[in-house]
Image (cartoon, rainbow, N blue to C red; front, side, top):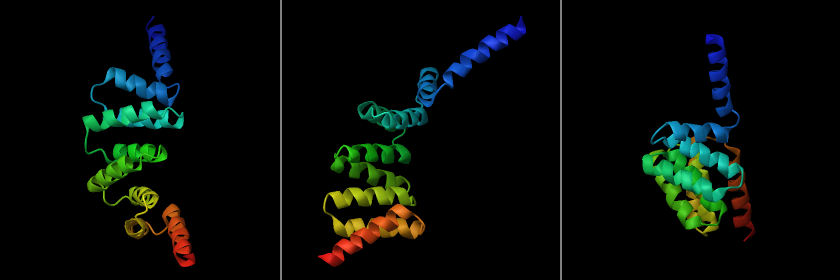
Length: 153
């Protein structure tokens, strides 16, 4: 009898681990104020192309924890892809205020600033990204492309 109950319980729990979306939705159903689950569910929804829902979860994560640098960065990436660049820049800057030593956030901000035509600040953040991680290929490659564009002008 005990074994049957354990098997039943294990099957129920295994259903929640079926995929990431199910797991994080379950985490939100059984916990309160779970900023990490909101952020991670936002990432899953983003990959599924459900950007409006992803944005809602990133914003919910930030309501719970306004200092969640990854949620600011993820929201910035989503907004930037939607060409809501001004909003993306705000979230990248907030993320860098919390975590100024993340080369990816500096790179993401540089891309958004370039999109707005702010070359000086683009270069500044690319340089910071490369200083933080000299092997960070996206920043190095973008910096080289930018340098080639500047030379050809």
